[in-house]
Image 1 (cartoon, rainbow, N blue to C red):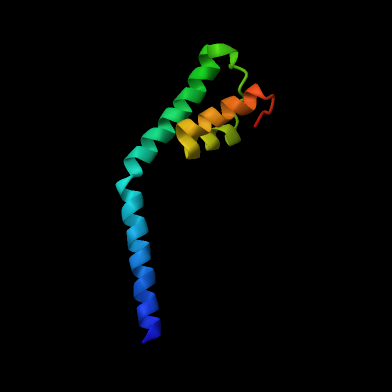
Image 2 (tube, rainbow, N blue to C red; image 1 turned 180 degrees about the vertical axis):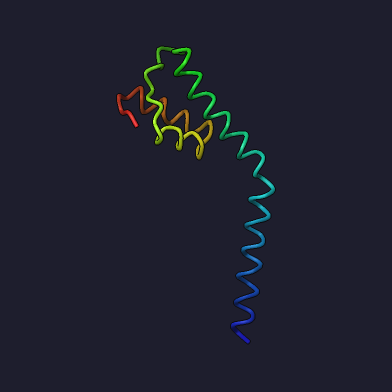
Length: 84
């Protein structure tokens, strides 16, 4: 009996997490794409003298997962002299 209640609780928790993720997936994708575009635009146009941001797999993943806040973190790290 307790196993059934526990299984139903876990199933409901997974369903709620999936619903929340799928509800916000559009916003997450747009944020990720904008972050990557900002990274490439800053690199290509050398905006604000920050064109020396290295475009590596790590920086692309940070922008893809973090979006605009990830890009801002890369800018701050670059301003402090830390390259990712």
